[in-house]
Image (cartoon, rainbow, N blue to C red):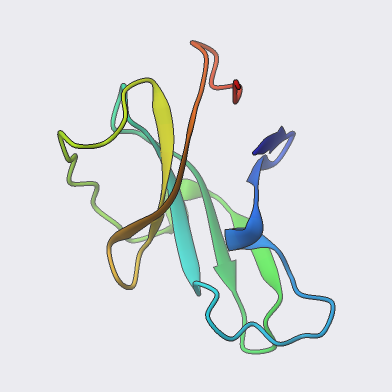
Length: 97
């Protein structure tokens, strides 16, 4: 996983070169498991293009799960409420490992 100036980047918020976004989430949030805060969000338009959005603009309520890995970020598909990715972070939120 990579943290950019705009947030975390990965397969879940990539825009396919082919334009075919079949199977990719329409909206995701990144949640720090140590705080329960949404720290990043992305949406996908009808053409398949993904775009970072302000987490405050996403209508999603985090329900923490004790099974989430500690000191990590979980990526949640807001439509299904499923964790689709997770990765460890350090105290500043930078991915490690």
